[in-house]
Length: 365
Image 1 (cartoon, rainbow, N blue to C red):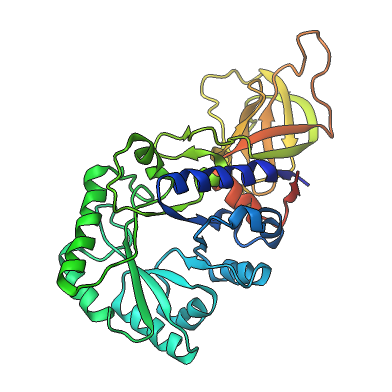
Image 2 (tube, rainbow, N blue to C red):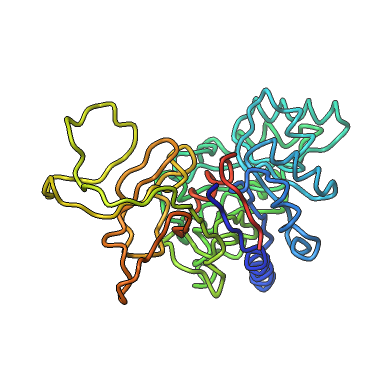
């Protein structure tokens, strides 16, 4: 089976580096683990006491993942990082200390669930700042807050926003200042001091370094920087974080010299993605390798082959074909054999899908 190699010590070092960074800037943060989909092996390997001691909370967007977080560490503070479905209010209250919300009826359902469980459930109200994903419209925020802040089993602990995740709206000082101003408006109107202004995700990290984050922004929700070492705004390494945290290894299951251009009429029977053959001659040949994974496991667009001589040819449900040219080293020796591995670098979405595939082995090193 193809194998995803996870560099656990480098990931743990990234998390501790970010904790120190946020502490220096007087910012609390939540570690978002949704890329691992609640994988218990990951949780045990990565979320050790020394790693999470300076983290405010650990977050995920799936209830099964939060359930696994609690199973691994019952005392861990957890945050549900998307507006919950109303029907799952009881489970959200059971497994999450905090949730992000933008719907009045859902918050009322959470209040009823918290009453049944004899709990106080904390929420962060999300505000729409232009990304057009989750968030209360800005002009409705005051009346929205007025309807929820007196619910007996709900504690509003902050305001939040989400930028950069759907349309790629860039976070900047003006966007975050709007968020800060709404916190001040609520404080003045209702004499309530909200504890957190949750200013964003890994995409916003460079603004802290640049000193362009308003001082009231005191909470971040971070996943990609912790696990991949990058800020997705420009997909660049952040500080000195490790970026070589994952490696995908696929086995060569066939290695043959074959024609480059398929024979016959190309039809709609093709279910995968294939290369462009328009500039190639029908009788040209090359050495092709078949690898033991397919599009059910991962999107080839999210993989980058480490050997620059290896080129993508096509992918089906359970196999990938690559072109390895002459299959010769500079010394003229055979470069690859059946049973050898082709190594890929992975991005966030690749790791998320590979970890969800039951056909991919995982190895923590």
